[in-house]
Length: 97
Length: 377
Image 1 (cartoon, rainbow over the protein chains, first blue to last red):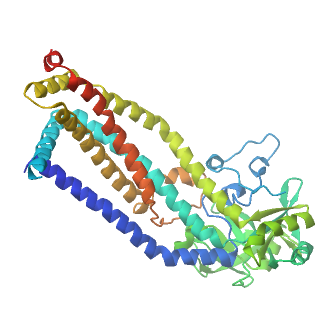
Image 2: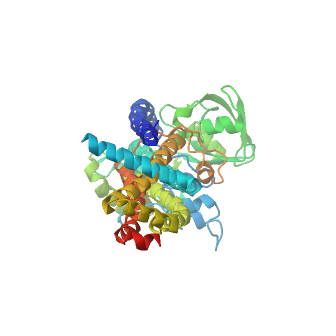
């Protein structure tokens, strides 16, 4: 087998897998619709506001509910204690009064 | 056409032979290139998928939330605020929510306690999320005890558990009855954690928020839109943080590949000289070297992207888990929905494949236009 044939076969196989990954993504999103709807219903039913990503502190568990000072409220001069605080930006508010 | 195709195949044969003569260098380059594409694609796929999932799931979170602030801290809100809010025209309904945190010394973990209004939980019973199930090895029927604010023991019987499918929003939930919640924390009737308000016309949300703010100056208002945008920025920020951490290696790779692609070794110069001497045209030499670049960059992109796809959507993004877990004891076990943005993939393709291929052209062109005799000397 010529080198070029081997390379072209390898590339076509990879392109096939790339196409398959897109097909897998479409299938996965379709299959997850029910579970996404169930999660959204649970959010509506229980009035949930945040994802469970960091459970160690209230401002990392519920970043959308925390105020801008909550990371520094433990004592005066307290710096943000938890490393995950650096992975979370402060909440965003609209320019309301 | 057939002639042209044959010519291209011969060129490809020649460039593959040329690459295999420098096997060590080529494989090293391919490995580094593939890992960079893998890391970039993993960050990109993970951030996009979780951002879309958050937007889909949180689209039904409370429309308006009203918190009471005292001296810069979130405080309990009295039920009389509910009447004031219900009196504002355009408000469809308003209800008090009871929720908070409970530290469990047995699991060394924080739970999110909530009092659901629908379905109501019977006093003495609890519904727990998947993270709590795993942290306490609890099953339906088990008993869990906690010390209340006054030191007395409050016991809960696990009624049922919440499915792992929804762990992303419910892993640390501990759903209890209103009586138990108030007893545990000593919260008097008529006080709530915050108020959830729904508005008749979604276009009036900001106006109603302004009215609530004017009527209740000691409150802070959080809109659903702000929750969604907070999550949008959480994942933008996190993607940015990861990219900043990766920036060093990306930069090192950029310098390495530029050096590799744009600087010609004496051996390569000689090779070009010989090709020109035996009658190759400048265009053919450039095409040959571009093919070499394309073979390396296209293979690296395809392998790197496919590995990243499998890593994020089929192996639970194991490499990012330590970063995402932070100090949390309860971390949700969830499988991301494979939301893939084709435009992002195309952008990644463009920025990883083209620069390397193009970077090979300029030095080759310079070497190829010089007299073969000079190049070979």
